Image 1 (spheres, rainbow, N blue to C red):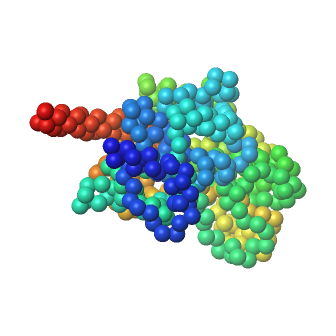
Image 2 (image 1 turned 180 degrees about the horizontal axis):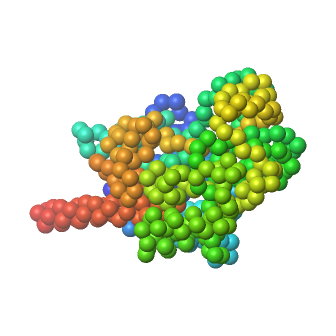
Image 3 (image 1 turned 90 degrees about the vertical axis):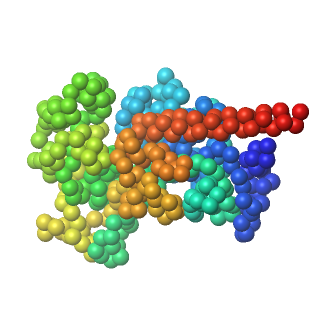
Length: 423
């Protein structure tokens, strides 16, 4: 009974205001169910799956809304790169009237509906500063800036894209123009007729270049490594969906050969335009390194026509000039860093039996990286997008539900024995 009272306290508006305005930690709060850190798609999926098993969960979110990365750090033209059936969260499909590749706004509307449908109410503005398993009492201690929560299970759902990766480039302080990460880029508006260098050739870098072209800018793309570029669709179906179907019947190496054969027929030899392919095929490389192939949405055509120029790695910056490793020097008005994100788990999780301190990802590869020791779990670190998130969320919820139900059965048995003795 006391556990339920403490759990309800954390949702009390009066307590919330005290927690926000106080500089000193409040009393320790017991949470009977799991604590989920992060209210992005991964955290919402885990909480919904737990609720489906009648297990209450508490979600802690550092921002003031759900899916803050999608809300604040994505560009306007963004769409899901994979068809919606591979991106929906567990227990609730996308609306049937949504297009195959939902827009950013549609995806956010879906997440809002998802949270409302499962009555998920995260505690916002609750940055977790540390989480540590206390072996003396056998519980997790999860500390925010104002409160310490104690729980039996901890689910890490902060995701693969928690913190921007900003590379150190020689001469960055000398460059006269703006240098911004794609997390701050919204559209090409404001870059009209300007020469813009985009550093990074993943899906984001490619799409930002295309967006800049549409706003009459003059983009260039830095390609440091080899990469696979595939058409978004083959034979009028999504390349990803076709790959998943083929993998049911054929080895990954054979599927890779088929994908590369069709890609060469549809896109041509990309090495002629400065995009060299890795030795490993796209699916095999994805499985080993997590490196995602680029699904082309029109950027390749702009590179072929010269509207987007391709350069190798940057050697140094100076004033408004960029020098590349091949000796070329070019003037640019602005630089956009499409250099991705990283996990922030090692900065606050003090028990790294599941996560690597080096990169903040589970040390075991998919599909084994969802479970650690002492009730520690991970959702959203599979390097397989929202499909991987759904798989992990279902596994975690099922396991915790089994432990939850066993605990309650034991309590009922003990309560029954006590009642029998008292009578």
